[in-house]
Image (tube, helix red, strand yellow):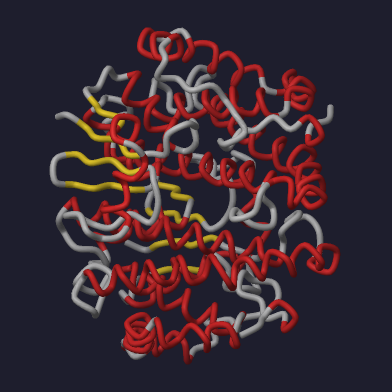
Length: 235
Length: 235
């Protein structure tokens, strides 16, 4: 199967969670907008293309299927790419964890856009400062402490006792947060040894290492989710 | 199968999307915290109970499975409760739509809590006012216009050409938004005829009508997601 991934160019964004799964598995795929421009997605978003209408990128075309929402895409790809355990109960658990990662990703995004996605960060700075404090002090310890417990519950190496797309997403989360909140993540590090070791192992997987060294990996920047604004960080 | 639903007492919240599915299907279930108190959920949340650890309620116990995240629960229940089409491609589409509903629900919640879930609404009123304007003017038309198109694409009666858990969730969304933003929803109504008709039909389904008339249906209140604060509404 040749997959077609559709996502905004110029940023990692939510598309990156799907890219990491495709790259780790060595899947055959085209990152369509990077070849044809962002405009290529409009036919899908406006309902002028065969298949269900996505609300927003990323979406994946797999044969005639058009699949949107990151967790849904990974749930679909998991068995084929061998990135989820076979048992249905484990697929359910993987989806739950991925959705919890998605919840944190949404909170991280809203930290620099607490009022409106349609406004610039510069137009909502006071609100962002308040929200960043909440994220740093309450939400990050709560979410990351939860994921640390999940890895511990699963034997200490993986979210699901074996490699899965959830580990890939946890890697992305840890690297993104380290970029966005270097001071805060340094403070939290002693409480998150399993997550840090997991991220380091993921980084050395052949498919991931090759991807990270390639031009396909866009650097973290201030168009994406994980944005480094120094004024929003603190130990 | 007898299901055990775990969710906070005293509000509809995210648990309501699961309740509506169980009630519509006439499923045999216990709303555990309503019988034993909210404390009964702690063993699960602290990892002292068999099965995967949920991050937060709602979660469902089905035999030995413990399933968290609303969309995940509905994806699991769908086939058994006959609340999703059989084809895998349609199950994927249902999950995508449910996740998009979940995204809007999160934005609705953050409208009255734009800074911090841990603070009272009264402590984040100026930010809430700005965020509510963005939701009313940009996000609601975008999301609801999308769902209206989805129903239209599917023949005009359902999100998925037949009754499903997605229709039940769209009902809850429309009723919740009408409670929270009566002025704004009145303005948008002429553009959303299919969604309004869908919600009215869902309301008359035997299982739903009986549930809504029962004491099990908690009224919308200011502990839930859909809170009516008049100062956040406008035509």
